[in-house]
Length: 111
Length: 119
Image (cartoon, rainbow over all chains, first blue to last red; front, side):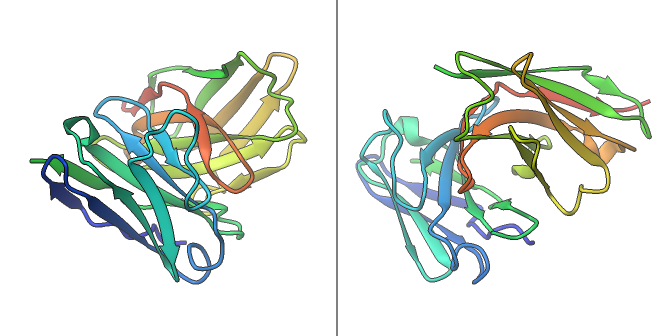
């Protein structure tokens, strides 16, 4: 099972909205509504931001939202803040022996 | 709340077996709702799923690592473990343990532990 495809980097100015895409296949992202998103600061463990495509865990800002269309999932961050600058990873359940697959990660820069 | 902490040697020689333990606190590892997972991250690279175990002992492994990986659980100690055999320099990474749900999401994560494979 290949890794999910994410853009290497995205950027935006404070207050703007950005979207990070996560492209898989019909056997992972396209087949299940089980995409999750993680935020990771340098030297720190990842933090769950979105699960099951569009659900936010308790304590995660509502500026973070998730969606999916076909084989591509998306993470949108609205009202961009300096503290949002981090790496973001998507993940999908695959239902196969691979079980779970991650994207390659996207570095978000807040200009 | 549930917390996880990895422990084990930070240096392993090539061809030997990497062994890590994850200690769970603030909750029971025997909870029927969760899986217990291992994920790794080479320096400057992305996350790689290693595998996970249910408290029944049922496991799923990344096919690319399956021949070398064993994940086990010790409910009496509230711990689960990772063994990766025949390691090479390519196995050098930060290794994370995490609690997960059957649909794949994981939360929370341990702080991570760096394992270097070198002679």
